[in-house]
Image 1 (cartoon, rainbow, N blue to C red):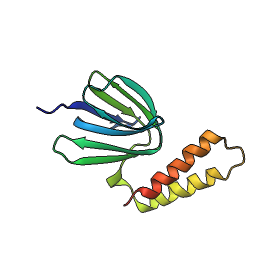
Image 2: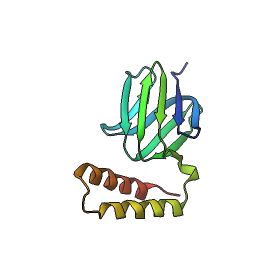
Image 3: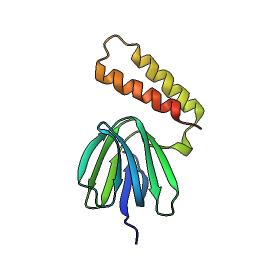
Image 4: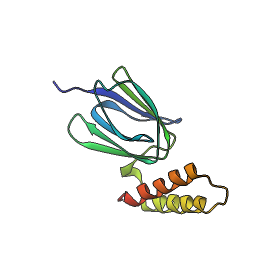
Length: 131
């Protein structure tokens, strides 16, 4: 029997995804990390990127996130993010507007290095998404 665990992706308005899965690849500030069953307990922050989920049937689902937190404890992975969107639900117009807004934020004079890193990374992720 394959090892599985529970995943929930939750926004303030609703539960975006809830199911048992085989694996989740998470974009964290420590780097991309894969979470499998029996992973050590962890709490960390999400950076802009793609959450890739391997479902029990072998298919994958992907979600774009701009920020959030994750907690893995007791074979339950909870992702809290107000910006999680299924890749299938993204439009070219949404991505173009998001890229334009992000590029405008980079031109501000009072931006610090951490914000510059996050915004540049966000632009790189947006450019990689194919819709």
